[in-house]
Amino acid sequence: MLAALGIDTDTERVYRAMLAHRDEGISALSQRLALPEDTLRDCLDRLHSLALVRPSGKAESTFRVLGPEQAMKLLLARQQAELAAQQERLESARAAAAQLVAECAALHRPSAGLRTEELTGAEEIRDRLARLAADVRHEVMTLAPGGAHTESDLEASRQPNATLLDRGVTVRTVYLDSVRNHQPTLQHVQWLHQRGGHVRTAPSLPIRMIIADRTEAVLPLDTADASLGAVVIRGQGVLTALCELFHSTWQAATPLMPTRERDADGLTPQHRAALRLLAQGLKDEAVAKRLGVSTRTARRFAAELMDALEARSRFEAGVHAVQNGWLPAHRV
Image (cartoon, rainbow, N blue to C red; front, side, top):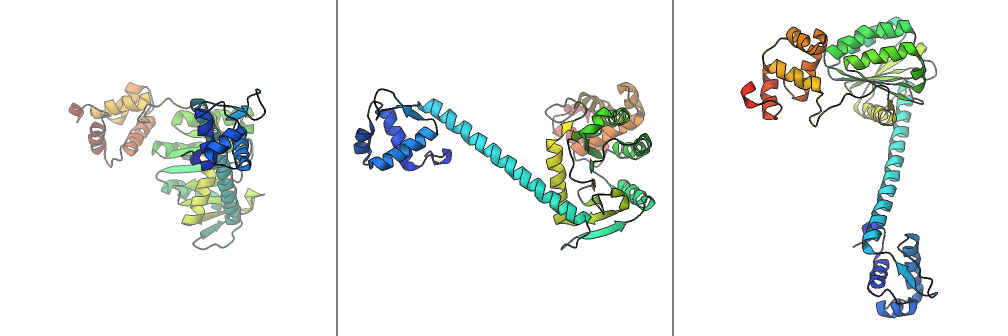
């Protein structure tokens, strides 16, 4: 019964007998359970290692046994700690495997099912990234090593990021911790946060990487010098590994800006207010004015609500909102 907690059958029998006959010593327990003393002592060693029994001090052959309630709490806590450690090892292994795949892909090594497109020169890379941004529909995930970014680079990235966010695309970026000490980058991150972007930082990053809709990834041709060129990668197996690498890095990273408070449905108070106003038939401009935000932000709220409600039109979003209990029935 207690095998899941690390206790074999004989050890469990010994523990149960000690609970029922607390004053019996080794000889008496051996006779009662029909166990050889050597086997009984092995069971006691196991129970002692689990902190379930200890010598009583009254006699060399007698023991004090921990009560079942405390024992189960202790065993469960031990199991939880072991599972947590195992999960941590698993996550580390996944990240290591994903990083290896990323580095091999970036070095343009052939792989079954892997499709690549090599880019050379800054202009070609910029043009390809612009097309990638234009085609993305759901999510952009970026690992951005390299420390502080120049003000001109940050400024140049604002319009593309604004376009993505206004279209309702989720934008997640991990920078190095060192950007926390760079004021222009902090201002840029604050701007991203206000527009709905998500930014975290980590002490180190495995590789420079951009993933669009989990179907395409852009990596440097040379991991030591990103300026030498880039490669666009497609292929389910490789993209799965790269997404896993991003996910493990994101989970371990620290949010740079506070997260907006969301309710049980994953909506912020602004989302709720926008939903009520849209259900009243207000246009984006009117919603923006009522909420005190830009028209672009109001459009982004609408797009995020449609995505959350899996709706293809605003009318369908209203119907789904009623069905989900987000709006009273008389709204639609």
